[in-house]
Image (cartoon, rainbow, N blue to C red; front, side, top):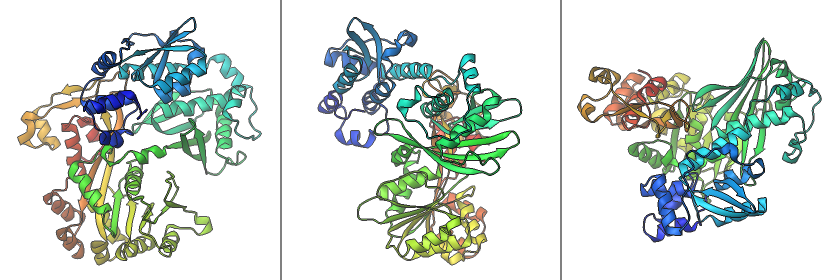
Amino acid sequence: MNINSPLLRKFITLGRIDAETVKLKQREYNSTAELISKSCGIDAHELAEQCTDLFRVPYFDIKDFDVSLISDELVKEKLIREHHILPLIKKGRKLYIAASDPTDYGAFENFEFSTGLSCEVVVVDYNQLENKIEQLLDAAGSLHLTDDEFKELGDLDTDKPRDMPSSDEDKDDAPIIVYINKILMDAIKKGASDLHFEPYEHRYRVRFRIDGILHEMASPPNSLASRLSARIKVMSRLDIAEKRKPQDGRIKLKITERKSIDFRVSTLPTLWGEKIVMRILDSSSAMLGIDVLGYEPEQKKLYMDALEQPQGMILVTGPTGSGKTVSLYTGLNILNQPERNISTAEDPVEINLEGINQVQINTKADMTFANALKAFLRQDPDVVMVGEIRDLETAEISIKAAQTGHLVLSTLHTNSAPETLTRLLNMGVPAYNVASSISLIIAQRLARRLCPKCKTPEKLPDEELIRQGFDPATLSKLTLFSPKGCDSCTDGYKGRVGIYEVMQITPEIAQIIMRGGNSLEIAEVSLKSGFNNLRLSGLKKAADGVTSLAEINRVTSF
């Protein structure tokens, strides 16, 4: 996004958008046009027409434009992705370019320099532009190889380890390398969180986890199983000769000059070969800001108030893949100021944040969570983050830190906020320490967002809505939506949103803890205190049209 764009300055001058909004929201959107559109409350088509009037640039409707007509020599993927522009057609020495921001002159100059052509700009609807860019680059980077290419792959000998080639060498290197690189890039483009490479007796499949759901994306020949795993292990700096034990590694993939993405790699010996799972670790997810995570206003305030306290403990709970890491790192990013000393103990360190002292847990070297915490307390810390409280020793040291003037953030694997308290008591932590040290508990899940372009209204009987948990008094104004599916989404969903139960430890809840009360009693008092549980928070998201009732039923207890 070009924040120095004359288009953006024009809208600021006209008073349609303020500079502070630009600073706050520039990370939320892909392009300048999208930022202006969402901030000003105008649709993409209307914005394009306003650009035409303001800058005397012709408008072009690319909805029905066939991207297969674009010459391969014009497909400069790096420039297209970085600047959100699309080369359309070449006429002599002139190249027509589609852009949603007709004033991004630096982007046009880069394209002129790269192609040696003179660029003529037409303004387009940014939604249509993003769709066409994805169509073009998906076609250029398809995972489906031809039979001849597969035959070529089958003849390769990748048993000998070798260094990962640079991007310049990839073009001339083995197709197996190109194929793996295409899979990784395709996973990033599709917004996948995990990649699964799975060998079976008669087939091999590659699956992506997109918005929490696994989708089969490719099925290369089964004969390539050992070669695919060998290539990934070489990239991860793992021992390719060791096929009987699980291994863990890491890959750093450079996307642009300024952006790189890490992959956490795990191998597992199975009956028919090694299954490999790769987790995509995108550090930009920690920079999203708390406003885009899905907290309700009152929940956000509770979290921000707890982060402002000089001491106490904030616990984030939920199953694997529920977004705990992003919630913790968002909090750490808010706290990350020059006047604070922040240390974290993690297993593994998933996201690197400058200004924070991050420690990788290594049990073989006796660097456990408990030992790391003991060391932290001798390092003059202000804020401490413990990746997970797994045992009584770690819990006791964390609570001691919270009671002696430090702010402690950590996670537990429990199903709800009230169960977190009883879990600590069951570990053996004294009730007094639990009641006096913990200030806030956040239980969370991730639900898929409905695609705003294709979601359709859904009508359910009032009896069913009441049974699902909706307030009978709100049914007359309630409109639910269901997924449909279009070219812009996956099965009617696009992206995910957090569903939260944010519970502050009030004096009433502290009294229940002190007298040994159970999680049901705590949950009842929590609701009376105005802290919505996960189910109610989910129903609020469905009522707001953010997600569907079916999705809420999938991720929360009913």
